[in-house]
Image (cartoon, rainbow, N blue to C red):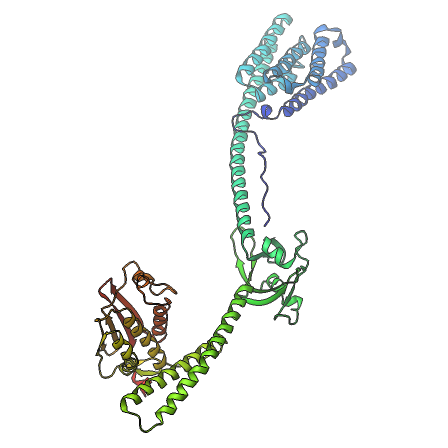
Length: 554
């Protein structure tokens, strides 16, 4: 992702005069102010030469012209950026004296030139310089009036000139102060903006680093299909040139592994550039290094109040996930296939043994339990195979089942194991408990509950199974006097592969998957499951299932 560069401050810090912050501007200002006055005086001299050359015979006029021209030459030659600011005031104060000589004895006809140095001082210097400058003008006017012995009208004209210069000086000084205050405000605002720009630039750099650190390819496209940004993962996957991101990369996308290449218009990038929205589109990518990648492509629309709308193309490399799914399918198929053969033999031999008319009732009952358990195992294996192959099963309406009969059948299978561990099982279930659910799946859940209760109940313990039937629900309780579960472990018993500390300390083996499977089955049937346990006192599993409605029963 592109990141903004840091920008140096373009304004001087607060409290620093503009001339001090940039000495070159001081020299240019001196040149500009003095050259304007010098040029005006030169033009005046040429006009005087043409219209009234007799003025050159008066030494004050010639001296004033010489002073102004000399000061102009000094202003051009002297390196003002190497001198203190106060040294610049010598030029306008000298101009005031030169203009005084220029206008001496001429009824102040050339006194208008005082406007130039007065405005210069009022604009760039403080009142400490302005007041002496106006005082010097006043002294020159008084001396001129005393020497030339002017009348009342001339004296009035001199006073008006002095007052006008004073007004111009005050106005220029106040305007300059306001201008400096405004510049100071602009500097502060610019400094704040500079700080904000640097913070935003830093945030953008950090975001770019985060996006480049992801193993997910990200491309941001404008509404016109222009590439705004690409992260490193996307560039590496597609072999895109950063300088020309619009050009197709060196990688080729396929609809299937080693199938037909996708048309240019059907590739995720082209579709995202057109503004299409899609999610989890699967494609195969043959990258520039000759490797295949399974990709999941999605788009997200980015809408902001201060930026044009854009589209985010997100590409996940799911090759490892696809390989793990295939490995899981192969494992499930292999295990199921290997289990099916011995189970077929067990069920077949049990059926053959049951055909013997000379069997005792006890042996026949045991063989029937073996045959039923084998058939259920075969059905479970078929379910595993169908799931591993991704076979779609249409969801049907909840069937009906008698929970009491299912639990009784499960008890018949587990009573030998309970007797071997000297654990007594007490059946307090109602005669019938019709529920809405799949009998096969419920039998799987009840088998897991009873198996856990028998495994974790010490010899001499008791397992009590009871139930309550209400108009809406069937509530089943499986209570044992086993080792129990610590309160800290209760919130995690449904997590995959989690085994409570009390279970780990016992010698009973397990995988930590049983409780999660039980809850999943019960919730799939529309029910709920609750667990209560006390360490060393036992555990109670409560299953609540919906009652089968009359319509379902019919």
